[in-house]
Image (cartoon, rainbow, N blue to C red):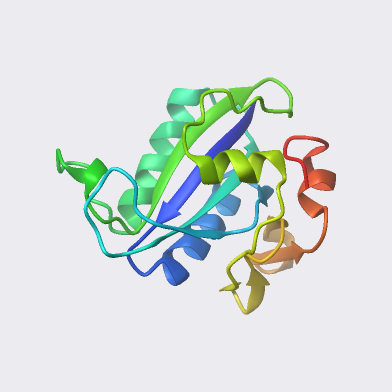
Length: 173
């Protein structure tokens, strides 16, 4: 199954978003990432802007098990999911499944956030520069791999159209 997820962070986002991407790569292998965009908080009262991105990965796990892993990832980075107001509070990371399909190629019909819709459509955006294990991330589409054979390291390939090539039309790029 292919998963399209939205990632967002407004507590130390320059640190937490790359950490979430690295953990997704450790969990699911290859992760394709859109450019990272800075957005104003929506549906909550906060002065902290968000960094947001779309991620695509493949897993044999059903959606409920993937969601369980995503919740555990959020908690490992400090999100208090037991707080009934957690959806309207600042957060170190939020990872939501936006769509899942048997093959890549997402419609985005259920996506309500404009910034995610623009990223899915492949619109030109000014990506935010981030760093993951000393490698640039965020300014352009990227593919992030967890390479267990090379000493358990993260491999980041960033550049034009990488997202498109990585998942063959899962996300335009």
